[in-house]
Amino acid sequence: MFDWKLLLRSSGADAVILTSPSNTLYASGYVSSFRTALLTKDGGYFLTDSRYFGEASEKVKGLKVVECSNQSLYSTLIELLQGAKRVAYDTDISLVEYLKLTTKLASFELVPLGKELSLMRSVKSDMEIEKIRKALSISEKAFDMLLGFVREGVSERECAYTLEYYMMKLGGERISFDTIMAFGENTAYPHAHPTDKRLEKGMFVTCDFGAVVDGYHSDITRTFVFGKPTDKMLDVYNTVKDAGSLAMENIKDGVSARYVDSVAREHISKKGYGEYFTHSLGHGVGIDIHEEPRLASSSDTVLVTNNVVTVEPGIYIGGEFGVRIEEMVVVKDDGNERLNVSTRELIML
Ligand code: GLY
Ligand code: MN
Ligand code: MN
Image (cartoon, rainbow, N blue to C red; front, side, top):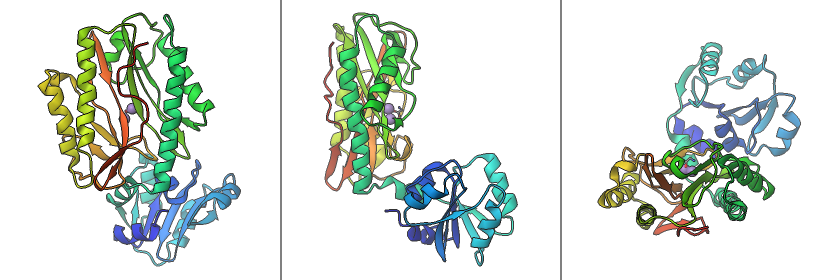
């Protein structure tokens, strides 16, 4: 469970105010449209309004639930902040919220919270890993069901919303992000929006999708071929698959995220497709779909045990096709555990 006293100590402030949906969910186990978590030396609080107070009282963990209204939020905060001078706030807020905060709490020394919270969030507990595993398992089962639905003439949009329907039917509480579903030439767009394009023989199909369970996201990409692939399609697919496998062979506690990115990138370059791998290798996943640590050439992060990261190399050849294969892994002391159970081999329908 979230150790809010540790966060307060490491922030170097007398109090911490959290307002972003993700941070308040992490801090309390509960999320609502009106919410502020306040951590002080006298206690930790979750402030919400009358619409959520009853439910929050049952569901919030580790913090005292306090009822206030939109009008009384800042006066309640000021009361609870008695004796505090330096107050840290999470920076994941809108400009309007920032202006309100800095105006209404101008009597305090307000400082942006550093990386402490995102670092804490990047190291998952066993319970968090189980939620991610469940979210991913639902996504993979839904993908299997989609393979039974796919037929000639079906559209990208039909496949996208059918996959989403299957995920919800299997217990997903919502989708992790707008489903990416691309056929043929559209697979060369890494983040294609589904269109009315219809499936024809010989096309690649790329699906990038995920379900959320108890607030935790999954993120998976599978590329398969409808009909027979060309030699070039096979070569690109195998290059992407091998780049991912090589990267995963190198993921363990103590390895730099930049190095893991370079392993995949060098393999793709060696095969002659370097210019077509246009994004970073992966990212942390949890309460947010994209969080720390980033697996990128610009990253200074060193991976640690219980980071949960994606490994998602891709090759995108404009006007022809693209391939991305995305896995989720948990970093371990001496290696990593791949959370996916579905095959990485090319599926030919
Ligand atoms: N679906 C976005 C990503 O894979 O990062
Ligand atoms: Mn993805
Ligand atoms: Mn991803």
